[in-house]
Amino acid sequence: MRNLILVAFTEPVSDGLVFPRDDWPLHITLVRFDVEMKSGDAGTGGEVGNGGGGGHVAGLDDRIAGLIDEPVRAALGSRLTIGEDAGFGRQESVPVSLVEPSRPLQDLHESLVGTVMGLPGRVPTPHHILENYRPHVSHHGDKRPRPGDVVVLDRVALVDMAPDGNHSVRRILHLWELTK
Image (cartoon, rainbow, N blue to C red; front, side):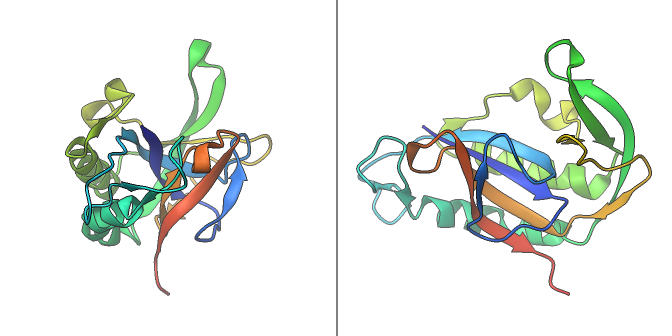
């Protein structure tokens, strides 16, 4: 299984950026998913490269990007308002800023979930999707949005949670940006 995530970054990033797993740029998670890596699916992005072991699957990134390109591009430019602070995770110990309800953001999330549910794999957190989706920005030390801040959905990315099998870093595989 390959662990991937689709996010909307709220601060600048670049395509191909590699960053430590504990130092993410601020972002809104859209959907996290695992996809099976199959050999022998020539032409559909299933060829295993880099010798397996969590390595890159040739073409899989492009296949996923192609499947979600239209809904991502339709959502770019949406304005989102940061709401109140909350605590997520065990004993609500992870500080986050909620994102106020947004039809464009919810539509994007639902479209992405629908697409990834059609891939061979799974969404490991099914109780946090669709009608239970609570968009938020996790705080990272002093980095955090403030209630009332308005952010523009201008960077959506497909991120590998363990590039080349390395679970200590993350890599942006594909980045959609709002053209100015």
